[in-house]
Length: 298
Image 1 (cartoon, rainbow, N blue to C red):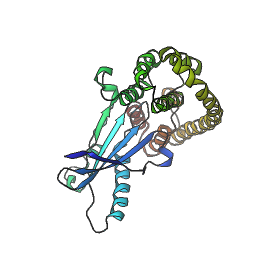
Image 2: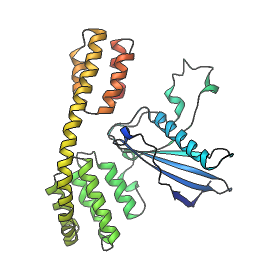
Image 3: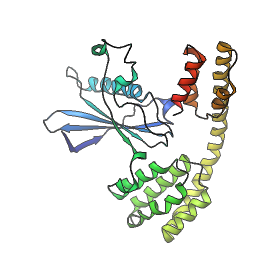
Image 4: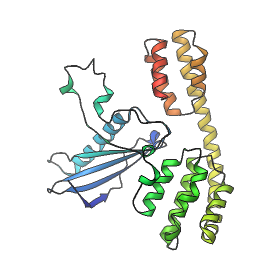
């Protein structure tokens, strides 16, 4: 139904400022073959576990897109939006791809026609074999790297991934692309040291890799200092969030089992801890909170 030759990338982003660490997005305008136009909204989830409320985030962003679109086409009906979610976490995606999956079916029985509903397209990269990932060199390399960025064996996979770049490095755009990939690796994982990354790039890409690395190393060193400060602040926020969850549970239920306290202490994701804090306030019982905790950690 889409005339893909008319895909036009817009400059807009609709992700909340406090969620940009976990999500990034792209909005495309496209013509339909029958003459009207529509949007394709792509949301990338950069987390090792799936966000259970992804449908709610999508709905909020889609409303923002419609509002902006309506201002631009006064007096006309809204354009359809096709939402696409790209996920590359290690945990299996278990959430339904329909918005109504967020509702309790028993409590909403008979009220279905009053509930908003839409479906999104899910691309869970963890469910694809490497051989199944096709396309141009740049697309394939980025998808493979995105798929394995959280993997323990990323180091072993990098040589094969970088070998795909050999044919495009003679072009300036190819070198810029490699620089982008290296920055993505250093910011997306702490499993690979810069020295090891330089070694694999130099070996796989021969002399071209060696010429690229010094400039990037200098930039990464400066960035690393800034990241160290940011990480220190982040760790403080995470510890405060853990304590807030535990304090809420102890205030409401007095005695909290050590097993629950241990699981909370092991969580280092600020967004997840914020969700748990809300659950600790709203849960009807400690058992219900324990169930909520298990679901969020799946």
